[in-house]
Image (tube, rainbow, N blue to C red):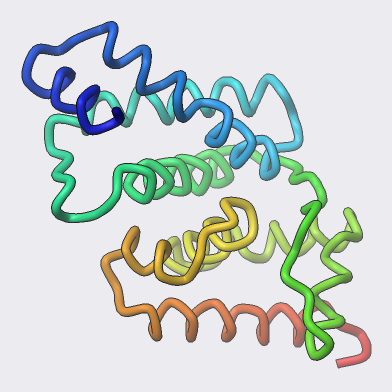
Length: 176
């Protein structure tokens, strides 16, 4: 159905199709943004900005280059990165984070104060690193989805993610 709406928007500028496309994706994008802002109003404003950017960029979207959802999350992650540059947004603790026996440190990210410090640290890093971090932790995207969104090999995305976890461990783990 999404592809039909996208074609209607691209070919005829259909407002009805645009409304349906936004409604179909709104909740997921709003949750992605809210987890990173922690404020309902900020999340609503940023989500609206994301969908306006999506509609402006939609004429150039090509499904053969990747899934619409992946493309939309890339726009969303870029908008969050831009917003974090402009204002200090307070993230919410992540409800579900990958935790393995080796990654006990990662479980500590639930600590709000630590998460805020980490967010401040990550927000100062290269946007590509931030994108991987945000799509993986807040967007709950798989490595193949992130690789598709960034147009990079999956191995490069994994490497960037695990290097960042290592840097976060060095920076914030008093036992490490």
